[in-house]
Length: 585
Image 1 (tube, rainbow, N blue to C red):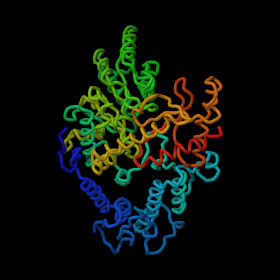
Image 2 (tube, rainbow, N blue to C red; image 1 turned 45 degrees about the horizontal axis):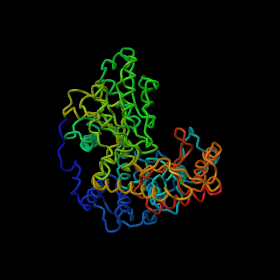
Image 3 (cartoon, rainbow, N blue to C red; image 1 turned 60 degrees about the vertical axis):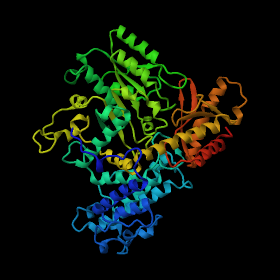
Image 4 (spheres, rainbow, N blue to C red; image 1 turned 180 degrees about the horizontal axis):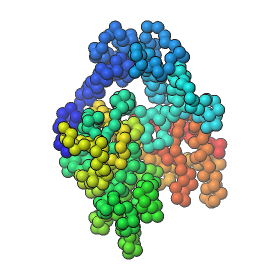
């Protein structure tokens, strides 16, 4: 594939992009967006960049709302209302909006109402005085609102009410005190990019219908491969609907590499295949085996050490066992950042085993891949450059809005050969441009969402150093939490030592259990503590953190930090809240 070149499309060097340059780039894109959306996008720019940033004169000012002409530093709904008279949305329907004849005014006012709702939600997300969640039980929500679909259309007043209701009960995943999942935060540039992507509403299968987005995917995947350590960013890759699908792609390609005939003849034409992954790996490895007809019984779980890292000697032992039974080891999935402990498997040692037995090595770095951005922490992925494929989810540690997952493959052309079906109604061979940019035939999907623009625009706005600072901050907060609770009364660490990632796993021990003998009764009672505290957190709406059992360990809290909005204050709040909600248990 020919390179689109440097300059506009490429990323800044790790050192050299000034903050003002990055900011100017994002602002320029806001101005471009205004050209196509009128004054609506200026509201977002005002929120992002504050007072003094004037929107470009890209339209007839007399036709714009007064709120589009000036940008306030704080969101004020009144400043964005038009003075042309109120529109009664109870008398309007979707058929009154574009492409209806003369539907421009109604469309703009309707979208402005929606934007007002969204901007208020964004502002509230970062307000620590607001709830993380307004929790209601499923039966309560089902009874309180009419969610059923009807044969008759609802008016736009009802549609706007539906929007308000959806946001009212949505979880504020960008709230500084939301720690429940690996994907948290709400990035403003990423949000703007996601809105633009939805407005463009195109598909990623050919250059002819997604020219800019296809080029940006090419540029970004190459940059990600460079950061893994593959020479010159060589190889291939694709953005997929999440890490589970990226891992499935890796297994699919590994099977094709060893037995290309499986594409036409199926599993009956090849020997029994065996995959290997750690006992603490993501469940998607087994799901992928099930989906591909390999079977979950053909996934061998490798033992881990006390900190959750795969033991390479056990991997080698199990590979030898499989070969002795006449099976064919074809795939090893190492993990860089396990879901619960945040453990990083010893990739160099694992790659030695894979090379010795000629087995495809995949690295599931969905959670840990973001650490490649950090000069301080990237050593934890040493050996990733020796892998055949890598999964990396920017929607986790890098805070890119969901969804954004990439599979990177070392060997160029392998993904295309594995998946292509030569559909002549899409991938005509006599087009007038370079057909290597028609990337859709290497994907399993036909329709593929544009996930690239938000990552690319955030990278342009932050630079690699901006992502580095974000990652370093989150890991520092995890260490701060660990240091606060490791010797604090009422807390026990699940694993000893500083956290490997931002995962901090611990038990809260209520006063009633602190002097009990460590026996089955204590474990039975301790097992109930985390679920009760979590339920109370949700009912009060103050914070959210996950819990789970693991092996012989009863329910414990798994704290993860990936939201750059979080602070020491929020960590302190979490500790106090756990103690407040759990002291009577």
